[in-house]
Length: 187
Image 1 (cartoon, one colour):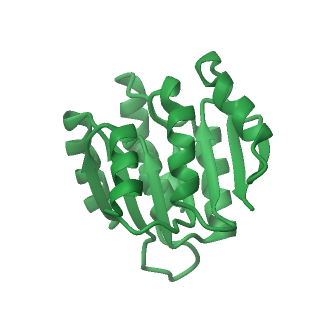
Image 2 (tube, one colour):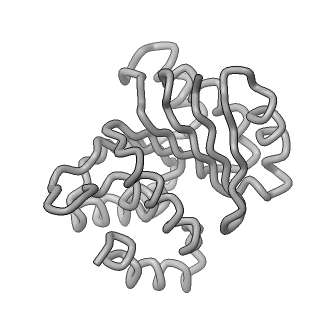
């Protein structure tokens, strides 16, 4: 069984309640990427109920018991209570920050509140704020960091998509899965 198989019963309930979580095809693509790249430090922007964070940070490989270190940001207190329960249930090492994502990213980068150099960054919060978050994400990256964004087919993400395709610091691929995803590697 995979982590997606393990968490899917919860995901079905969340989807029935219209909680915005990854579609199953996107979740499987994201997990495959994590299993290939094996990041140790992950930043997630948009926690919701902890579904994608669990998929991102769960141990990789047979017999592996250590999860990746996850820093996750969201401002929805009710959803974060569920996320905390989800992370405990699945043994995820998560630092949950309950604040506006863009403001938190600005504070992290300008005040050095959390060391940068994340291996993997996942963007899945307010679509209209993706572009604003991008520069902070790059500042929290190192060469080889992977920045993945969900919902890139959404018209609210058009300026973000245009920016990641043109940014000379990034090598970007658009992924046709779920609601559209992008994968950018920091050069």
